[in-house]
Length: 325
Image 1 (cartoon, rainbow, N blue to C red):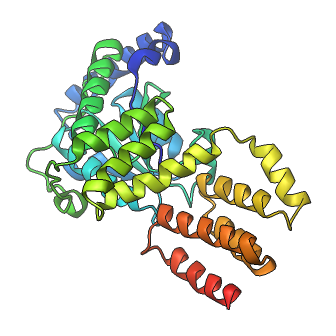
Image 2 (cartoon, helix red, strand yellow; image 1 turned 180 degrees about the horizontal axis):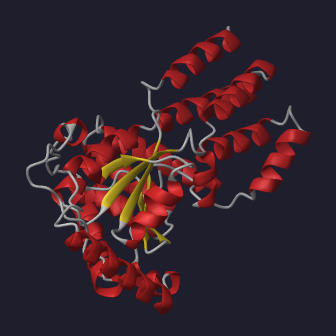
């Protein structure tokens, strides 16, 4: 949800000199082993994009990151921006030809990993280098920005950690997933969308809201701007909330409309989509007048965040209609 640029300035803190030296040593060992096997360490393009769960995280991500940078795409089936971003990352993983491996993690099925990385919204993209994690960006960033981030990651991984990537077999099939990844042409509003990303990176959610509105004023049907606006507004609302206080208030005061609205915002940011929808539908059922209308409007805003074609939105719309009528 929240687009953020990567800052490589924190890499020195995340990966201390000792870790860098160990990573270089392991990388050299891996290259030596591949050489002894006569090049048998080559991988196919299909191996550059993998699905990872909690059980395989240590071997597929942490251990692998001592040989090659691992870029993690945290996504969910209901997340519309994820559907824009994931194909781009998959295509770039193949295009970069082994300079990094893309690990895709479904947050709905791997809530523990989402919590461990401190993710507040998706899509969220991280890198793991020599066992050290660092945030890259959040949100469906423009491809130009993604490329710049990946270039910086690859450079740091090679210069500081000695990770030059994997050898890719040029004769191997790329795999259906990466073959189908679409080329995304530059759009006329990319610079305005990038401004929204930069505002979010600076924690200026109000500025991001305005940037998305600027796009929509010229192009009311711009899907990316609509999604971005709904998400930026959500993040602006929750940025100063104390989650513990909000949840306590909602639990102790089930008839307090504002408490339930605030808790639903936190539910959605945390990936608990059905909890957020269910909470507000039940609040609509219990309330009347202006309170009911306020809850209904907030629920419609959250529908925009998740996306109209998500089945959970469809189900919640039906539940809302029953609660209203």
